[in-house]
Length: 100
Image 1 (spheres, rainbow, N blue to C red):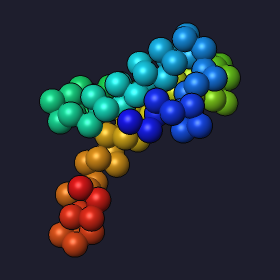
Image 2: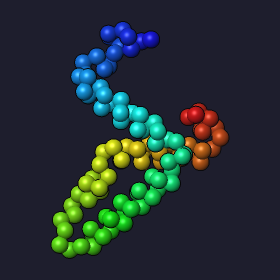
Image 3: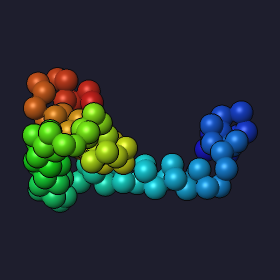
């Protein structure tokens, strides 16, 4: 396995803490491709968009960065990965075959 060779190990200089964070985020992103959680992601994203609309319409709220606040980086990457994974079957057979 190449990663066991120091010159190829891109994680070699990472702290144990950061390595665990990277592993956790990677696992979450991989699990986001599972269609079992599709409805939950759609519902959560719908709730976020509805909350954004409420905050945007509230003139007393400073809503300059609503999406970043509500989504957070973990949720954003999971939604991006899930959407990307979901779009593959909608491509032509030749393109989908290359990417699968």
